[in-house]
Length: 120
Figure (cartoon, rainbow, N blue to C red):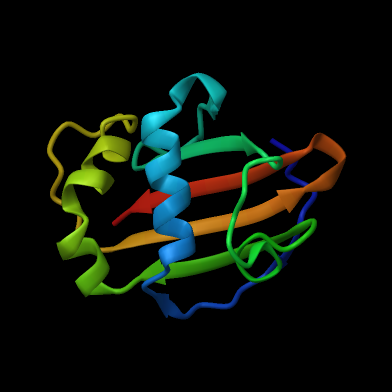
């Protein structure tokens, strides 16, 4: 992944249908997803083609900027099964997370949306 992104830290708890739909898409279309190995054991990092329809990409996947948000507690509780799917890609064994942070960006030069989940 491109680590030369500018970083805008908009730390706001989110309960986003747009991000949910992207996660749902990834679960059901794994062949289209590129997973990379992050340096942390509680993180899963991936990229998806930017041809995939995303609601409000200008909000959730800003061009060449990293957007960092925390899922609302309600979102984590309601979507534990979905989030556990991604947790299984981490090096952790027991899903005992309480918070999930999501970092997103659009990488136009690579025609990819970047998505990283951090389980805390």
